[in-house]
Length: 116
Image (cartoon, rainbow, N blue to C red; front, side, top):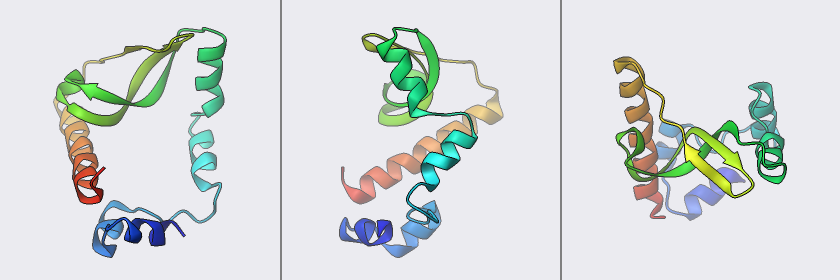
């Protein structure tokens, strides 16, 4: 179903394969994958509803943080009662920075392909 949707949005099969999109083995696979890594929506909801000021990984719109502009990318963020309180910029090693920029570049390429 996901692959059909992506194709209906103009994302070619080659791009889907290159970026490994639409290949979840079940509807709950993403949730299970994230839960296995300790990342849960519950953590985000609790941080906001209980004003915990907790640092969790979130996909947020970067405006220069980490050297990335005008793109949603997953980074550490502090969440509280007002939602996003702060994007946490951690110092990356040169190798980590290169990998981060490569990942952000892949996201940007996908955004351009599906025209969102």
